[in-house]
Image: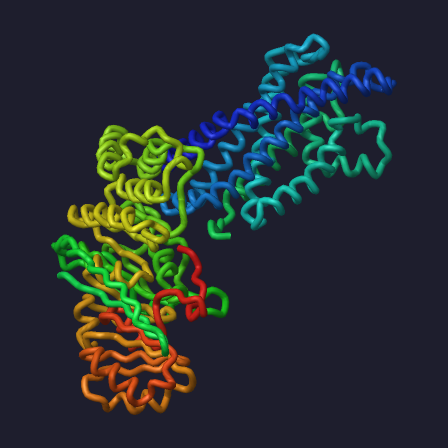
Length: 259
Length: 351
């Protein structure tokens, strides 16, 4: 019981910090919407892609995944702020195991990521130029989108925590996150469909964890009578496995608050 | 106890600079009250790679004590504290804290004040206290009551809603102490808690610490501040490279010393004069370290007269002061405690 209280208090602390940081809150919503407006309209009208009838709507699930990605990266980086401010030492000197402390930190990263991604989803749904198809019905499609967002954030926050406990500097952490995750985002089907890519890029798409999240989001929001690139059962299986596995490993690492 | 301190530097051709300061009476620490040990470590070893930080250290801290771990950087003080918190695993040896082996549960009875600042810059003073109370599963009503009482006591009640970065250095330290006390710990571990504080803040912090001790809380303090250890600690352990050099009350440790301590800086090799001094009347210990000779004497004046008569042309400088634990340390170990620019101390890992 005291462990749950400890996790809840660490979660509440990080949420309060997030809500106090208005710039982080606003930019996390504005940036994907800005990309939707500029990139979405630019590609849709300027390039007129023949295989996508509504590029702005196609792009929206990818922007929601990108929001989760950025949010997890920023939230995981709070590990370094906690370490450098010395507060991590205080947490680790409490009567709780390292796992409880890391669970509290990582869960707060998940919650912040989910809240930001859902905010983007809600704002996008209200924009007239974006035409979600809700192919499973609105309630089921929203539930599927929320489920995908939660799984993605569990995976990404676990990965962020895993890397933060191994990389000693925040600069190194951001470098690695950018080097690894930006290519993941580009080859995930967020910006262009995987169907029409050359085989070697399709292969990269298949081994890319984000592709399954994007595919699930496309099925929930964009697709109309389509079974998706991988299909819902495979999306579900891969994402669940990755989310549970990486979250578990990420919160099991030992941390050194001095380094 | 009222002590006067005379610090005097003599250059070869310069007049004496006097800096006289008188310390006030030290408040009485709480009586131990029980014969049980708050901390009991036996043959404790810990290494950072090849460097041995604790070398078969055996130490007992009585419950209710104000106990000082005194030594230069690199002597193992902070490492010992981090082992007591359970942040590191000893390579060998045994550790018992408050009568029990180390465990996460045991930490609910400990308070810690770290050497470096450890406040969340995104929280207010009251939130800082509330988070600590929740992490330690303190009932909300009790947490609120203890927070109000402690913030009042440390003079931060009016700043309860201030964000922590807006506090001064002394206020931050007092908040860290209040945070450690909010859970009503039986033992507080303090790693150089007054480092970088001005004298007024230092004195206020000690006032609060001694109040906590008077309420039954054992204080274990790691410091390299000799005067702080002498003034406030009832028991002191002198640590040298992870080993216990000596332990006792400040008075016990200084018992073998003479009244004054004289440090002589030589222009060349001090060995011949050092040998001769040992037979001079009123001279206690003579210790040579590099180009410095450290001598404890009954009275500095006749000793200095003789020194300058016999070897005045070879003396580069002289420092005289009332004997302190630093002199005890120097006599035992052959080097000082206080960090010096020439770097006679090694860096130490943080707690």
